[in-house]
Length: 282
Image 1 (cartoon, rainbow, N blue to C red):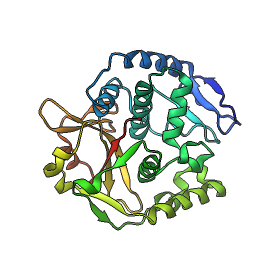
Image 2: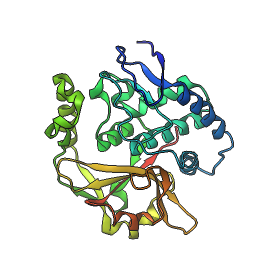
Image 3: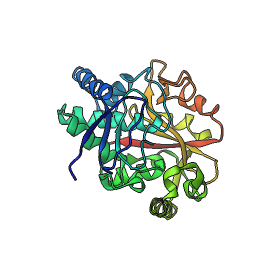
């Protein structure tokens, strides 16, 4: 199906009958044009540093939850004025792909965003979105966009059933649809057939040298049924330590954590460690 660009008023929301429509306000389209202008001078030594540089252009952008929950049909949502932790990472990767490929077109950007956000790179309803971040990791690893390196830097296998969405169906309005619910259940079953590898919180400091700027950091949790509660991008700052560049629920904006990652995590409720994922140059 041909993708349609539907202008909407930012913050007013939109519903559409086209399941694969693009939802984007005029303000966000303008923000995209501004963002691609910022990409040109971001010449870095390697891809990871490039991603950090791109991520830092979002500094100060407000944290906004549930930006993808627009209408009663799944659409490709473009929102550059408000980001949650996952859409921040997705947008950094999408703009990283554009920079590496030397393109500035909105079409290429939305193609990259769809590839990153949806199973097998194709939007096919609510169930095709990679809701669990470990599912996001596995699917983007299969696409050749990232590599999970957790096991190589001291990670350990964790035995834990992933079923939070299906066991909290009432929290997700679109799971009232039985087809959506069954698709999410199928995703959970796939996750539960795979090993979950986590670098324990107490082992992060001694393995910090193995984490590079640009690596994606996913925060593992002890919450029943859930794999990850937050995500961001590693950045080695002037103190020589790895910090977290992320859309923060503390400051409610994109920031670099004041504390190094290992210390920051000690203040995160129910955190058990991290999953470390290295983006691969496209």
